[in-house]
Length: 121
Image 1 (cartoon, rainbow, N blue to C red):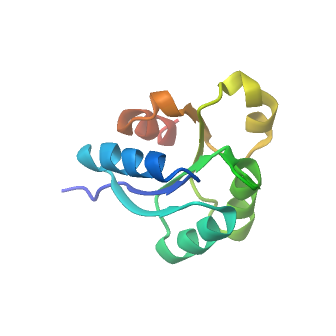
Image 2 (spheres, one colour):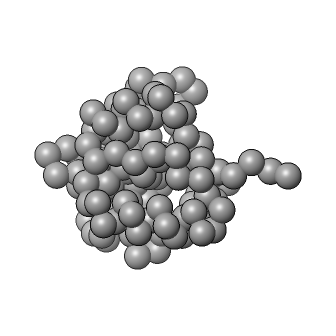
């Protein structure tokens, strides 16, 4: 029996965090925590050590790109982070390419299979 993938969701929208948690958990991904800001994301990540962290590009006052960089710089080995957004990937192509994130998923395409595929690239 394999252990479920452990996921942290970082997004400033309560509604999105709840919907994503529900969808992922129905598919067997264990959402171990959520965060709504960069500071909270670092605290929760350090406490829970998830297998994958989903970080919204736009966190209100925080930039998801900055959060990904801080997670990457603060942890060894580097965390598996996937950027998410309602915006198009083309809107952030250069920032995504420069980021230590594994990649980008538009929120409409977020699924357990898309996450697993990105982790195995």
